[in-house]
Amino acid sequence: MIRRYTRPGMGKLFTDQKKFETWLAIEIAILEALADAGVVPAEDVKEIKAHAEVDAERIAEIEEETNHDVVAFLRNVGESVGDAARWVHLGVTSSDVGDTGWALLLKEWKGSSAGTIVTIIIGIAIVVASIVIIGYGNNLAGDGCDPNCVIEECKNGFYNNTEHAELDGVTITRCDQK
Image 1 (cartoon, rainbow, N blue to C red):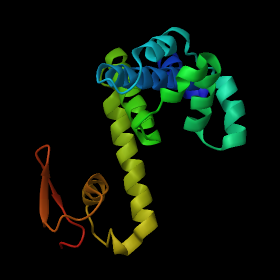
Image 2 (cartoon, rainbow, N blue to C red; image 1 turned 90 degrees about the vertical axis):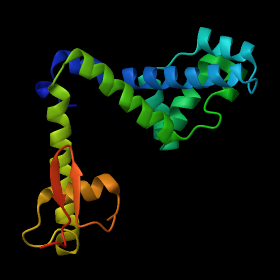
Image 3 (cartoon, rainbow, N blue to C red; image 1 turned 90 degrees about the horizontal axis):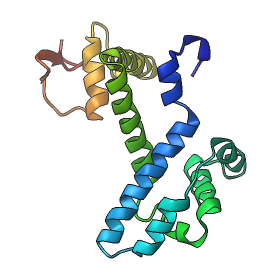
Image 4 (cartoon, rainbow, N blue to C red; image 1 turned 180 degrees about the horizontal axis):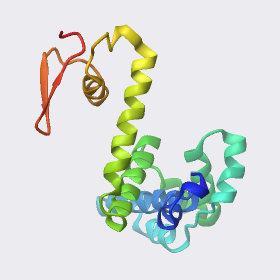
């Protein structure tokens, strides 16, 4: 984030340290469920909960070597927990942790800055639409195409072979429908 454009509350929420703390909370929640199911030892989960720490600066150092933020995060957790860390990230993908982390951070932010999230979503939609229009040109967004159809295309990931879609009361027309 660019500090001069960042509100203090938002700046505290979207730091690397907060991101990694959120990832750790997600990993612990998963481990608790796995322990309840008898998949991992409950004692190891207690050890992880009691001693696991994350340090954004240390994770950045490890990432220089690994070129992977989640691997660096996991190594850092292992440094504070020891052998019990072998269960962290069991059955989980990097996207599971990263995407869930973003969702939790956005939820927390929405709770502290009501209404601001709408501005971000609109901004993201405009950026995504711009990238798709520039990247695909007439292949996706031909002349006279409603930009909303590009956003719908990104939302669905592919055309669903319908001429029109209804999204929150707004009719969206496919790009190839004139």
